[in-house]
Image 1 (cartoon, rainbow, N blue to C red):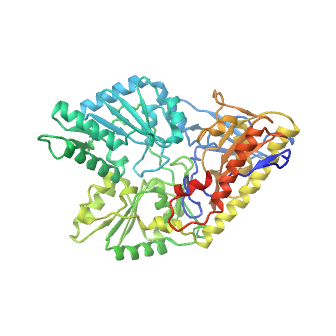
Image 2: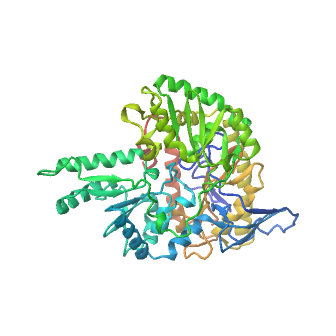
Image 3: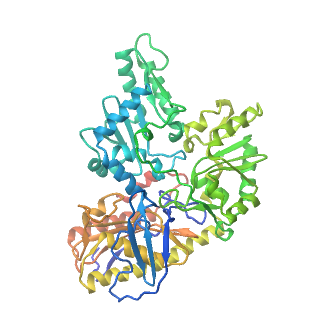
Length: 589
């Protein structure tokens, strides 16, 4: 704590690590890489002075976490320079597309349209989650329905619309952002985990009680079966049944019912003009030198576990499971995630992938699938194939993880035929083989080199040149140094570069023209949370810098406490299976 600060006061708050919260190592399990198509790559030799940034000052949508796509009626020309390589692009961020669409129409107008559709379809409540049919944390633009409706674009949150009110549930990471983005005249923010804030099932159960008391009719809750977890639907039904039991008098067994509006369009889609198309980007083969295990060996291991569980079919819905299982990656379907839209099934006699044919069109991918014995089926056939498998034999059973699969898949499986358990790929991903571990090590080596170059550039800009650097420029320059490394694909998540108070904003994302944008100088610290997506692995690096020769006492005190907390957790010895939150006390002693 009393050490003398060097000119470059570099503090290692968090070690370089592959973040389980955002991704697994791409050498084994997909991590996040944004769309990278519709680009013109122009390679040219260019020289620059030592004081030049390796990137120009235009916003780099793809490397800053924006998926790239053509935008009908509007194109944005951007250029970036990585030393001797210049890449010119005509691109637009899909997230920005959604934000623009969301802001074009007022909350009042969108909610009026939603309520009109709800009335037409006979539902009292409609639920809009963040999820896609694969329950992904990050979703293609086409599934950013909650973002379109609410104008809140955090990665977690569920909107609930009634005939008179509208609510948004989100966690503590996004309380600030949601407060800023929601129209408070029309939306109520429900802060998950806070005192007196009910869960969605509890809220709806209470609403059902009030509704039945007033109308003597069940509350009809509308939802799209493909974008809600099967476990959530079960939780809702249990909450409704419990509420009915608590009511006095002659009350039916349930006072509310889920209506999935089968055969009808998702209600948000019906009011969303210009909704983006579903992505169809091709898979690429993940080489054996990085995967370390063939598809055939993975399938054989899973089939062995299926025999033990007496399962005749296993269904895989999560996109990272499928990418791992079939040794494929994809760029562009999901922002900063090298995963492609697909389902998969394994039975005794067949291994199948359900996807758009364009995803397996490249010759090497098609050959890879053929060699692995994988049958390619239409994306929309997954539900009917599950039903067909069950009808083919009375003893057939389907292994499906309800917590990682949507309600549309689960509901066609009778309870007696369902094996609801963690799917076998989850554990396989968690145990890295030697090739995967080597890929992780290599990724951190090259990423460390990029970080070293960046640190030298940053110190020179702030201390030697004495200038200020914007958070956006920090992001661009750091990405430029990563882009020079062999095997670099994209960032592993949108860079968080927060100067001063912005460092306390969870998932902060700097943008030109923003009222929050700050400039780094020698008076404030900067927190940078960033990562690189490489062919062989993924990094997630959090660092804090302060360039003052003598930071004030408050900064020393707060920083020292955070450092001691990290050391406390790092040096802990604890029993196997101890939940992470239990260790939190050692970070705060």
